[in-house]
Length: 203
Ligand code: ADP
Ligand code: 5GP
Image (cartoon, rainbow, N blue to C red; front, side):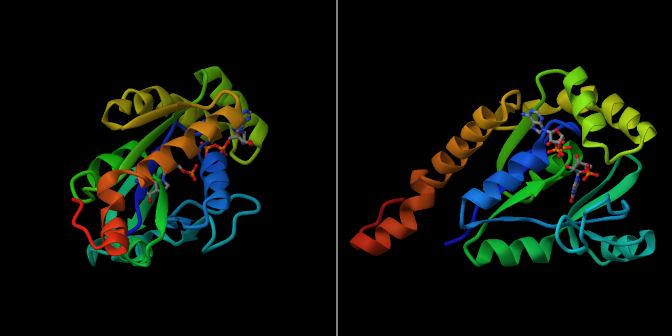
């Protein structure tokens, strides 16, 4: 049985990391896909947990040797998803949360046929900015750059299967859970298990 890749995008500050962490804590067969980035760690971030933090030349080498399923420049830094890491997770039957930007999501669509695309929105751009300020982990210039990029990112929401507005966190998480439960219960994803259990041939 292969796991399901969930592609989750959002403007910075919408609450994507918070919701993805809640989902990974809640579902025992769900894991984070850990990306590679040239961004320096924020206070409290640990190499190999939130990201694999690497320098520009190391990122370039990985890009050149085709190790990335997708990669993109976001807010002045580079981010990429390792194809091998993701394949290993999915082959082990684990589903994966891929927290990636809209460019990465668009390019992954060409290669990952069974992925589920989820877009998380803040109730407004003003709230988004306030959350980034309150989070207190990005410098003011970085926050300005992230808020400026938000409108353009939201404009790309049409390629996604689901939109969650993260106003009340508990309500937003209920929606994310509902999506994950419904997607994993789809007939085509259940067919192999059902066929094995009942000796039948549901497609
Ligand atoms: P992202 O990963 O999308 O950049 P985070 O998950 O880091 O965003 O959330 C940004 C900040 O907003 C964090 O401090 C987080 O605790 C807070 N936050 C997330 N969701 C909500 C919510 N529904 N209401 C209020 N604050 C929230
Ligand atoms: P942050 O610096 O706030 O952790 O992430 C900045 C942006 O980079 C977010 O929009 C996040 O989704 C995106 N991002 C994180 N990892 C990847 C990745 O592997 N690929 C792409 N394309 N974007 C990523």
